[in-house]
Amino acid sequence: MATPYSEYLNGRDPVDVMVDTIPKTRAAVSRFKPSDFDRAHAPGKWNAREVLIHMAHAEIVFGTRVRFALTTDNYVVQPFDQDEWMKLDQTGLDGQAALALFSFNRAFNLGLFKRLTKEQRAKTFTHPERGQMTIEDVLIMTAGHEVHHLAQLEEVARGVPRT
Image (tube, rainbow, N blue to C red):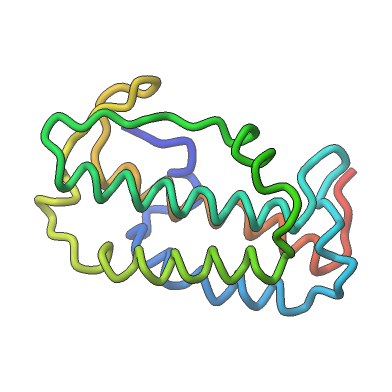
């Protein structure tokens, strides 16, 4: 099953992509001026701080899904609404704190993801909206999700708004 983020990996192993992209994400944000966290990569989109909060949310959710899938027979995912989650954390967390939360969770997840066997990566579970998935699918989504948002953060860092 192809995930919505498969195209971002260009056939690469998702764990290798995650290892490579986390320093790139930190590097992009390190070029931010404080006001850049309040800028969006395109009109009507989340600003950079919100993108980082969203990335932290996703990293928490995807890592939790993998852990449940590995430890729970017949696991069924609990979907989440990213916009509703954003409402909970839209204020009170600055961009640097959101980056730190994302980075910490990525490091925590990579500690597990790097050790997964081929059999573990093939383990299946059910997503109510997507049907049967594997842990490999989640790894692909996790890696591709960051690549997708990294491009947005790099646009903000360059100061190049999309029209």
